[in-house]
Image (cartoon, rainbow, N blue to C red; front, side, top):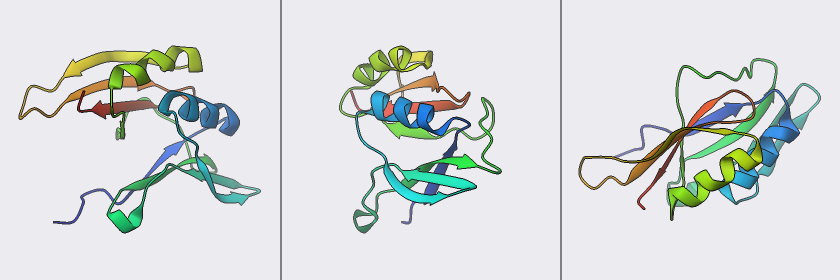
Length: 126
């Protein structure tokens, strides 16, 4: 069955601040995808050849951060708490702490606010 999600974009106002936040919190590096005078995109790690869903941090016209609307959940494996422990130090806020998902051993989720004003979800099995 195909994935319901094929791509996501997280908008940013201050690109360097947002890039530093996600790299610090998630513990990986974003890769340059597009660099133009009016738009910049840096990709989250994903292997499309393995069917992984990719996405990017986007700064430019039309990229407006929001605390409401669609929520993207980022993979926080192997332990969501380790990711949450880095959020405030990186300039964000924990909105919902590590919470068990009470169906089918689906793991845990949490909600954070990034440095740009977006609400982002986290998910892990532990």
